[in-house]
Length: 545
Image (cartoon, rainbow, N blue to C red; front, side, top):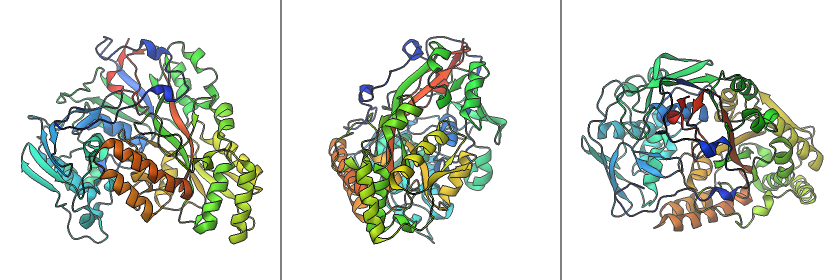
């Protein structure tokens, strides 16, 4: 980690933690310096972003993959998940509480505006302030004064922990010591913003001005159709574009995207649909990848629904978890391309443990599931005729298939009616989830923002966290997470975060299902394709042949 301070980077551990093929054609993938046609525009699949493209309001993959190309922050993450400096000249601290950040000279947004310390401080204050209702506001909670700007009806909108020293440096004072704070600074929420963003955030979100290796082409965002990016000539960082642009095509199904890939009408796909998992390696020859990444799949059981509250609700959650035969779904639907979850994080992260006390609740055990369900019914009967539903978009690969299999398992084990509640698109599903309008469970999962166990815990299960879809709240968990953040070392923090997971394994705000692996592919027209630690293609490095 290129910070001027003594700290251990959270880098990926060996991919052998998952019993998957490392890659297919990926063994021969060239580096960005390996040549290729730099004049080609690369086409890739995507989903329609849920919101306008503002850093602190983007927390889903459709918007995230675009944001990470049109913006860059103080650091970015290399293919292995190690942090490297982008705009940061240095990030230093003597006590892990007050950090001094110096930014590189002569950096500009794509409109020519200079990037200064104020560009960061103003963006972070905007993201944190309650009046702006940004989904990623939770990421700023560590900064001193966040509690005052984030409170409902807050009259102040600047955090006391942020101070501009001069144009090229600022200080960040945290509410408590947090040794891994610099690792987060490559995440979307921490990007800088130009002045135009604050004048009209809604308009800016539709036509963003960033500072990354690409910029949105004029008129480039055609909603529900495509998002076209072109190289940003003013960018001078480690992710320089090796191609003439990225054309993100919005697809309603991965099957349609995959057929376009086979016809060489799409250059890169980041997920192979289940209907093609048995044959994709044969279809693509050496143009495929199968590798683990920092991501998981879960089933959210909302805490705001009566049937999942109290002791009876806790028993129901455990019964549902033990009703799911994860291995059968992985083998039959995903052709072995996942690994059964043993916790709430990911095996490719430093500090991961597969033996946290209480994780037997994640093991298929139909007899125990029936027993727990009966105990719950004795306390608070399941409503007569009520259907257990799992809401999911059906435009994503495998969602319909695995949820139908999962609900059949739950129905057969518990003797209740269970079924998929299908919505057409990911955006529509996220709208229901964000509005807390679920009437049953919902499909969920997490793709890491930065390589840390905490990133799989705090943003999803901390009280009031921006990605806490089920509205779960536990004072005991909040206390443990805070304790882990204030640990004197990353290693000690990881031990405490795993202790926090013992609470989650009892409460099960979500039911962990499996760890993710990326199965992707590319066309005959491109070279230098590589997928990163978080399962996302390194779009900037792809070239034509």
